[in-house]
Length: 565
Ligand code: ATP
Ligand code: MG
Image 1 (cartoon, protein in one colour):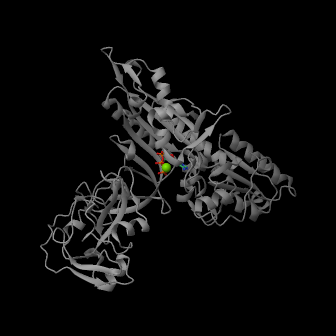
Image 2 (cartoon, rainbow, N blue to C red):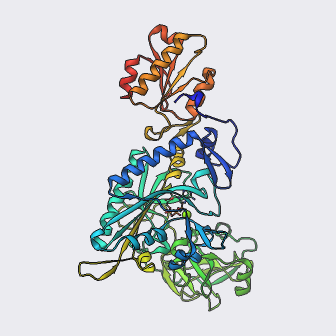
Image 3 (spheres, rainbow, N blue to C red):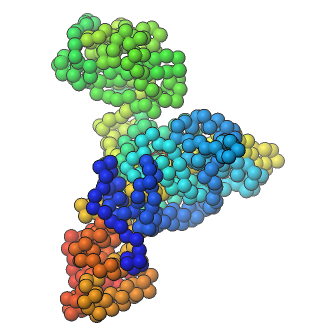
């Protein structure tokens, strides 16, 4: 490609809302342009990278035996009614009407449509297993679209759906997809981990997320230092403490804490450790408020809490008004001792072994010291409801947990019969009996991968692409071609030879000053840069620099070809 014929449009300034490196660099390199919140146009440069990722994903899906289809992005309401998700999917679902007032949604995912396809196409167990995939645009009306294409509203996803007669077959395809994903992210040159993931409202047996490790990642992950245990923090179990609860030794005493509302303030004021305090969170359950109690240094895990029978689906914090109305106390002073009897008290396993603890006094401006379970505070049930922290024992009993942050780029899921049952997708088994199929689903965030790779690989000057994702492998920069026909000719000949050898090359023939040209090539992250100049020609060499190296060096044409082969 000749840059003079390409639309490269790098920019100096980026908007202040570009908070993370990948978002800033994608804008500066001119890979994407914002149309509206969470909606982006991919420029020619950005699209080259997106297509590279797409190609690797497609190759590995095909290699793993999946077959490609293409489903519409507009899906009819009736189909979503069959699974109950027209209502349940919530605000992320973009609903639209046609001129006949028929309702549709823009695909956030395609379980309904693919299961409809499967129930019409698949009649016999002999057609199974089969794994259909597509690479298609999705729309989710995210509450907070941000970080550019990382969390966009419209984005490109590879979604695959497999159909099976038996659980063994599902487990086999799940494993094949797990392997395919590992190959995809390895090939793309990313540092990633597969972690156990929560199966959420969908249920099912197994789920793993593929996470690109990056400090800016939205997901918290935990790893054991003594085994290969790795999980999303949402999923990680906090093991029950081994020590039993000591017997009460102190009297229950109300103390004034006029302005101390947070655990940190209360603990500092009363000169106790937060580990000796109980933190009480009131959430809205199906039948009124529910109290969640964790140790002062711990946090409630909302996903675990969401699974409590009292809190179907999600835990929503109670509002100040509501708390005041039910308890007569403002948030900050709530505790398990003396809470109204109708509020269930769910206590985390670590909080449940405390004795003589500090907790809210259920009276504005006061806390209790010397509080004890059973004697002073009711326990409805003890459960694992906290987030694990660094240093906790690994749930598999081997080693301790470490924390890291990640960007979710892929998700594999054993769905079981949920969708096939709702849509009555059956096949005839060996005995001619209709059987509901089992399903797996497997997603890759193609556009998110582009941002995730940059997040992991960049420096002050710009992007450092792993070669399989780079828009071009080599940039040939020509110095002053107008003044020297020899230089122009040498650059043309080098460009032609690299192209002949099948090496993707961009010729920077825009006639820019060297500084501006080099800055652009560094910003857009081309792995190999070669400079053709009068001085080099005289010496019979080219100036070469790898994007990740600090210094340029002189090499011959042949050395360059060897290096790139
Ligand atoms: P997240 O927790 O990040 O919202 P999700 O669990 O909703 O992701 P899935 O439904 O599993 O995501 O979708 C499959 C893949 O699509 C994800 O692993 C992710 O890489 C990508 N993805 C999901 N939402 C977005 C988005 N808003 N923008 C870009 N990519 C996305
Ligand atoms: Mg999401």
